[in-house]
Image 1: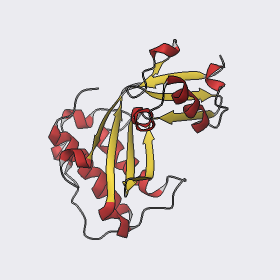
Image 2: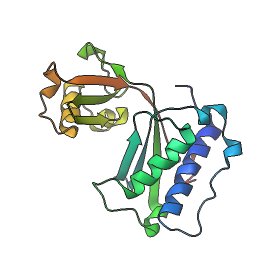
Image 3: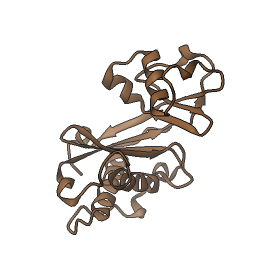
Image 4: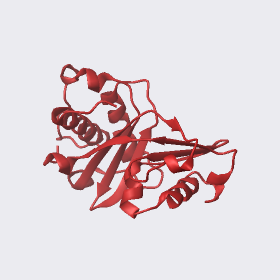
Length: 191
């Protein structure tokens, strides 16, 4: 994953905020940056997750492990899905938008884990799959909760709807990835 410049991060956050505002029916909202402003980096293909917080509590998080669309377009889709289609929450409404904070995680490609000690909580995110079940936790989740490697693996199994010890099962596939994570507050503005 190429680093993003300050301006590229600002553009992606602006795209996310404008897309959410439009999706929740807010008439006066931020103007989405034009496609002409997209750099080569914003046109690359990458997995993305958009996390929404309201009063420092999770309000929605949806993303794509990989995408065939440009990064900027994937951010737009993930932002709208996080606002309206995260089935853990009711859809975001226009009145909440001014208090919503947006965080974007741009993912590196998945790497199959062959040795559990390769996983570094806080540096790596995890994807665990068994059959049709899968669960993903972003790198920052392990840091937020102070999890050690085994706890991170257990919690990712739980997210997949598996027993917490299933990561030990040879039929389970474990993948790691890193993410470039940035937040509106980091840029000193609510874009």
